Image 1: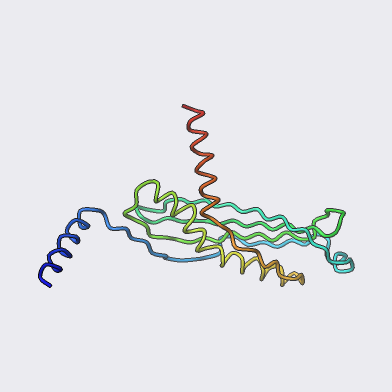
Image 2: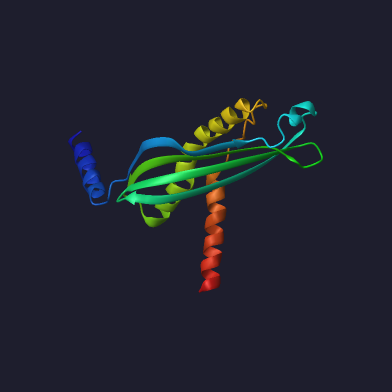
Length: 166
């Protein structure tokens, strides 16, 4: 038992030399929200055969030391039928303020580029569905997004650009 306590103390001492990772969500909020249905009310007279185009983007900025704003932008453009005329556009910028410290540069990029947007996505998806329902259309029920895979692709592009510039 005494030996176990010594091992735990030694392990805690070794960890004490490393900066402790801290992550907390400070606030989630809607930064921008819009809905447009340029063909209403005529669109309600046609048969519903939607084609959905979803654009997704993230950005972040540092508000102060260890405090970051992350913004997830979703834009859903829906056309109906074969004529490709826009039925509606629903857009949201879902934002969050996160306190993050103790991460190296690569881990911080991953946290801001994948982990935080993953937290924001359900809120953005709900906001889009709410807008669409208020426009008198069926909800979109957006599928989950793999932000880790998107981040990995973005990192590969960034590294390729750095190598091309070097």
